[in-house]
Length: 224
Image (cartoon, rainbow, N blue to C red; front, top):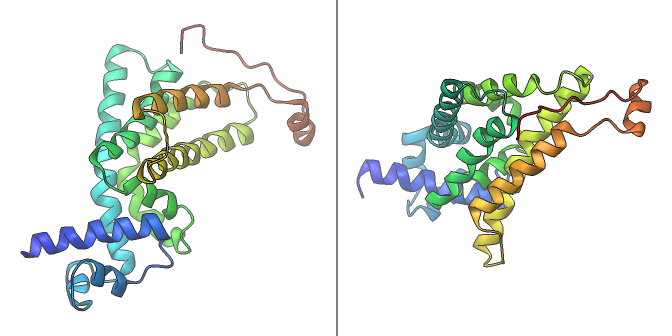
């Protein structure tokens, strides 16, 4: 096995184990063993420690997702459709869902990454790969002006978790051989749910906790 093949095997093995069993519970020794390495020397040679391995994994996968997202956003900008809420949300959902067509464990790994004990120390490493998400979030903000800032921010934060968890759940169902919606249908239905969630009027209960009356949500007259 060449050095390049060894490196790729270690990465894919780590991604699979992290995705299926959680990041905290998997040691570098376990990764090396399941990748067919007799000891940790190969892993440490290619990646250093566990956190550097995770950073490499994120960079490898997220760079592809971000590039696709940027491409889709550029197309919307050229077409003058950045005010189309549904179209903007598709730029967040589809690039991630498309990773499942590659039959890797990245989305399920990302799902585990959100609950990793050392998440805060690794978030900085994701900065170069979230430019597309940040651009999309700026366009989403224009649809949420009728909401209090705290509520708008909370909904956008919930959105990213919903996307990752929903796509990861579909992936796990598929791997277990359980009945699941076709991937394109899962993605488009998820976009529908996200549109409805972002534009949902504030309930009386939420308004009471905010100490404000519900504000009317002005919906985009264009089809979403």
